[in-house]
Amino acid sequence: MQDDIERRVADATLVIIGESLSSMTEILEGLGGELANATPDLPGANSPYAIVFHCVAVIEHWGGSVIAGLKIPRDRATEFTATGRVDDLIARVDDVRARLPEWVDMALREGIRDRTVMGSTRPELATATPEWVLTHLVRELSQHLGRLELTREVLRRA
Image (tube, rainbow, N blue to C red):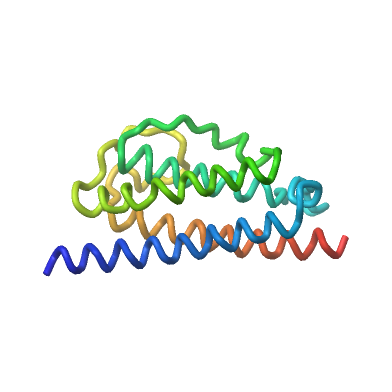
């Protein structure tokens, strides 16, 4: 019974995160390099590139570092000003998407390996369950996908 529940949680997590990542890469491809790296003229706005770059770092942090204990370096502050080639960022998205199933499985079967990781503003790390971490990833990507969609529309209208 427990294995069935774990598999369903893993499958749902991977499907929803996968849909968010697919939408993000489609938006980047549709915008092209110039617009993907443009920042809307709004207080606190980020470029589409920076939003997706941040999402990859979020997955690497929570999945790779916290769950898997890989100590993937993170500079959260620079994520929001990142720029670069769309193709290179899509390759990073593809890489993290390929690694995610192992991390999700690890979370549900083994738990969290490293609670000492730095790079998050969330105090829950000290007590977070694996299920909380996975749900947090789904929430973060969904939230940032919405922000990315709005940013795309603002840039296209400008």
